Image 1 (cartoon, rainbow, N blue to C red):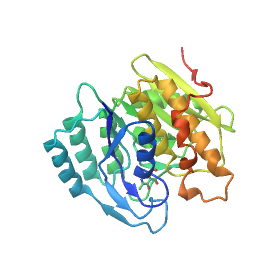
Image 2 (cartoon, rainbow, N blue to C red):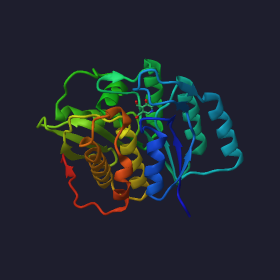
Image 3 (spheres, protein in one colour):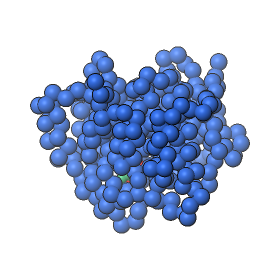
Image 4 (cartoon, protein in one colour):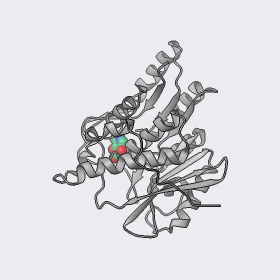
Amino acid sequence: MMKKIAAIHDLSGYGRASLTVVIPILSHMGYQVCPLPTAVLSAHSEYPGFRSQDLTDFMGEAIDHWKALGLQFDAIYSGYLASGRQMEIVEEFFREFKNEGNFIVVDPVVGDHGKLYPGMTDGMVAGMRRLCACAKIITPNLTEAAFLLGRDPRGPISPAEAVRWCEALSALGPEHVIITSAPHEHARNVATLAYNRTDGRAWRVVSDHVPASYPGTGDAFASVITGCMLNGESLPEAIDRAVHFINMGIKATFGHPHQPLNGMNQERVLHYLNAPLPYYSYELINE
Ligand code: PXL
C-alpha cells in the first residue's frame, strides 16, 4: 500500500515554497501527497506586493469531505498557515485524523532572520505553539525557535544554548525537536540540531555556511524529514539526509546568477533523494 501524507500548506505560485516544494519532494520519495491548501498566493510572502487568497472556509469543507470519505493518513504534515483561525482548524484536524499508526510533523513557519514573516502576529505564534504540542516532530529554524520560546529572536546565542532551546521546545510536547540554522563554534559553519526527548540524546550535522538565503529551504528540509521518518529512518539519519539534500540544492543554485527569492533549484537535485547517502556525518553531542 502506498503511504499517504496529508500536507497542510499554502500554494505559492512563484518562488518555490510550500506545496511547490513539498509535493515534488515527497512524491519523489514514493509517497502520495494529499494537499489541504491553506491559501493561494501569487508568490510567497517575501516578494513585495504578493497577493493572497485565504482558504480558511474552504479548508473546513475539504476536511468534511475527507471525513466523509473515511480517509486515513500515515503522516500529517503542516507548514505555513495564513491566520489564527486556521491554526484552530488544523488543531481540530489533528484530533480527528491522528491515530495509533500515524504521526504529526509541524513546521512552525512564522519567520526567519530574526523577524516574523509579513502578516504573522503574536497570536499566530501562540497558535503555532499549540500545534507544536500535538506534534511528534517539529522543525523550527532558530528565529522560529526563539519566537516559540518567547526569547529574543535577534540576540546572538551560543551553540550550547541552541541545544538547550531544543530541550526547552521538547517540553512543549514534541518527542523530536530539530532546529535548523543554529550557530556553530566556527562562523563559517552552521549546525542542524536534533533532540530526542525519549532517550535524551542530542545530535548535530554541521555544514558550510553559504552566504545566501533561499526561501523554501525550510519547507524542503521538513519535507525530507517527514519522508525519512515515514521510511523508518533514525532521527540523526533523517537530519543527515535532509541537510545533504539542502546543501546539494543550494550548490546547484548558488553558482548561477543570483535570484535568491526564487528558491533553490530543487529540480536539479530531486534524484539524490533516492540515492544512498555518500557518508554519514551526524554526531552525538551530549552524553
Ligand atoms: O517557506 C516558508 C513559506 C511558506 N509559505 C509562504 C511563505 C513562506 C516564507 O516566506 O511566504 C507563503
